[in-house]
Image (cartoon, rainbow, N blue to C red; front, side, top):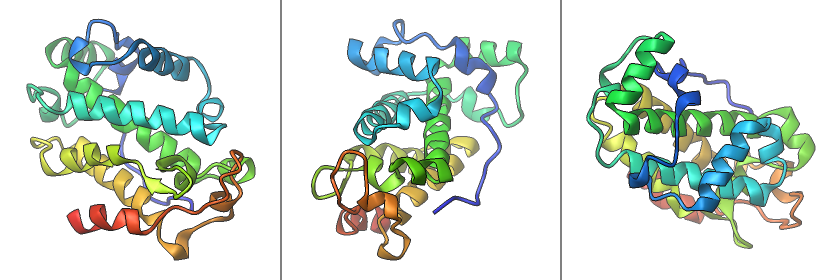
Length: 207
């Protein structure tokens, strides 16, 4: 199901390309995760999402970024409500790198979900259902809780809260039987399974 909802971009989007992962040790990224982030940045999003299993690995890393970055933020980025020039965005990166990482992770997840809701995804056998729901049973990946944490404890960050809520809603809707598409049951990886609605009940109740 293609999303008809959209949000304004992050006010600090101009700083995303200046993010450096190695100095941000508090994110606890492994070398493999750092390499995956860099590879995704250097290729079209369709390349990264072309295989459902690779795409699931990527979204897990983005959700890990979100979980680690949103624990302790200074709040500087959260208070920015208007789009920044590149210089101001870089100042925000210096003042609050984890705030920028939080926006980066959510922005990437939003792009992924939009791409997985597009005709391209249907043609290539990938979907929200076979990327965010893993394994033979199609269980919702447990890292979804990072989105809920931002929604409930976003410290007044309007962009992060709205975007995280929209991402989580679209992920959960994909498990509803009435919304399942052909790409959920004809995945490239041969899984041949639909997302488990029962695994989405807990987050639905949490919302």
